[in-house]
Image (cartoon, rainbow, N blue to C red; front, side, top):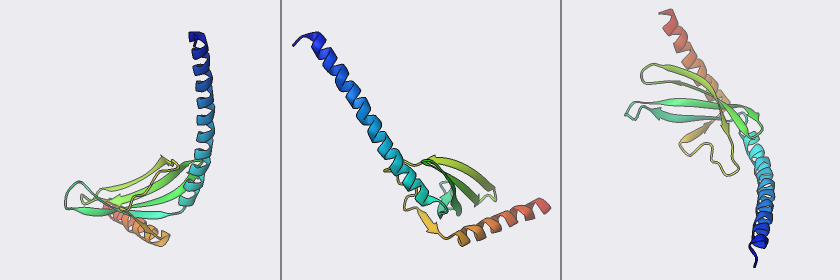
Length: 128
């Protein structure tokens, strides 16, 4: 077989691979969006620590879905009385396990009560 023919065949196969990969990416993106939408409004708690015996709960709520990304709100009061509140974005892949078994599903009421308790401690600390 001549080298030109081999190069042409390889180029054609590479183009076909690229087209197939694009098609697969579109399918995975649709699946990822569906998975992300399923997390909207869900709440979790996670036993957090500084790699010590002192543990506390980190509370998480999925507050928004943007395409295949979820935006979460986190709140925690650490064993050092540090209060941490943040929002972050996480991309969902179709085979991704966003929240492992270490994340305990909770209802929104439990999340809100925990958030209010932590925020009230922050207000008390500011008044002192």
